[in-house]
Image (cartoon, rainbow, N blue to C red; front, top):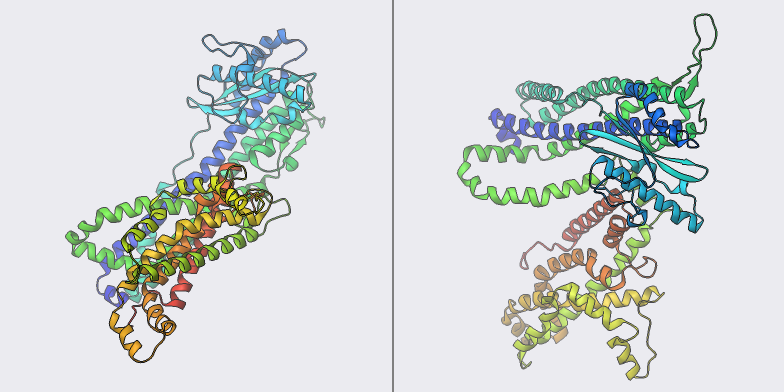
Amino acid sequence: MAESRLRDNAFHSLVAAFLLALVAALAGLGVQRYVGTGQERRTEEFSALSAALQLASLVRSDRMDEVGSVLERERPLMAEDGVRRMLFVRRGQVVPGLNVSRPAKVAFSLGAAVEGTDDERLVTLCASLDQKQRTDSAQGAGFLDQVGRKALAWRQGGRVVGAWPVVAGGQFLGLAAVEVEPAPAAPSALPVAAVLVGMFLAVYLLLHRLLGRPLVAFVASSAAVLVAAGILMVRDEGDKADSALLSRDRTATRFVNRVLGENPAAVADFDRLWADVFREPADGMEIVPVAEADGATASTPVVCMESGDVASAVALDRTYPTLLVLFVVLAICALVFLPFCELVQGVMTMPGTYAYVAPAMVGMVVLVLVPFLMGVGLGFFNTDYEFVGVENFGDILFPSAESDTNFYFTLGVTVLWTVSNVVLHVAIGLFLALLLVGQRVRLRGLFRVLLIVPWAVPNYITALVWKWMFTSQMGAINLMLEAVGIQPVSWFGPSFWTNFFAALATNTWLGFPFMMVVSMGALQSIPNELYEAAGMDGASRWQKFRFITLPLLKPALFPAIILGTIWTFNMFNIIYLVTRGRPDNKTNILITEAYRFFAELNQYGVAAAYCVLIFVILLLYTLVTNRVTRATQGAFE
């Protein structure tokens, strides 16, 4: 029906197609720029750190008075790599105005940003490394194995700064540092995106005129644009990959030619640097002797890679994330194309009506849709915000023996937690509602207010109070057990069941008032004439409850059960505040496990993937229960 109405008005469908194509183009540009920026930053980091490593290798640690001559000798050569400034920061060196002369005052945290100028930051890092070596020596740890070399590179003031520790005879002597000009920015892909959007509209108009089917035209145009974008991007990224690999080979060649003779061991550090920065081993790197014209071997070898295969792999790595995002966005756009066309048609024909709901829609998009999409997208990136596809989901669903979690065990605990709580909430809430609705109960209003109090108190306060009640030393629960002659229980000890019961009791106290209020409202809406007629027919109390009360409670109770299940499934506060996952994270549910990956393990992509899986599980649960229970239907349908 919607498609037939749009056939006669191609303009509205064209506007809708243009807007959706624009959304897809912006998404593709964002991902393409994100991936490209990551590659550029890795290349800049590699250039700065390799230059710093080269300088550190050339500094003669046994004759530190010659450092100045080394810097002067190497300055013209390193300028070829874009090095603007070179310096050596000795251990114990002090910058005027910066109180870091005593290394013990500086905390060792290379990963954290250090405020101040480049010189101040270098002195701070030097003092931190000195303190780290002192601590490791006292503990018998290996200093070189602990230093996070990659953390010694940063961007500041439009430059890339790299620093490398100079170590000789097991002693840290200082930092060799360089400032490198950043690589020129890659050309914008905006013109290519504009051409692709124009191509999309042209193909759409042609197919719409020939076929008269807006949806078919949109799908076919999307497929054509995906193919064209793939061809253009693979070719463009291949050229960029060749240029980047040539730059890498040039940098590696200069490093080998200057360092290999004086410090052969530095090549091993260079290999580790290569693997750390580019996330690939340096196995393909080969030192090739260059033949001179007379057939003799030149004294300056050349480092080369198997550039053909590597360039193709790099081009594909930089292309497939953008194409995948384009495919997903265009597929979603195809699903909502017809409703969106009707929305565009309504906005263009009745702008005043839609202006009234525009603020609410904008708020929903900004506060709900955008964070949701960003959370979903984060699940496809690793800790360094590099696109890894479905790797995070694979690590969760197919854990290895060394994995930090067991998704299926946690899912089982989550299901047990949810079912136990919801059953208790409904049973206690419905029982109390039946009591309070009856006319024979005196002070019904007072009891109703008192029984709603657990729901009115903030749940984190309730969780902390119940946690104190379950403590072994002074907890009210154990005092009550002692009063009746039962030995106190270590509720938060090594037993899974005691920890689980403590959390279950706390959440039951929090959850039954909601079910009670819903049940009371539904019970009060049931006509009393139905019970009178059933009584005249000889129905018992159980029969009245089964054949009158329960069916008429269904429209109110089933949606409340679905909502309560979703709340309990994601009940972060109670698990986190009461048990903290004890023992050994066994009482963690999916949402607290996701938080553990985020806050404790700093694996943001895995945490986001957990949240996506939670959303999918709850979405499927809602769809299935709505269909099975028909919870959205009225009582008399």
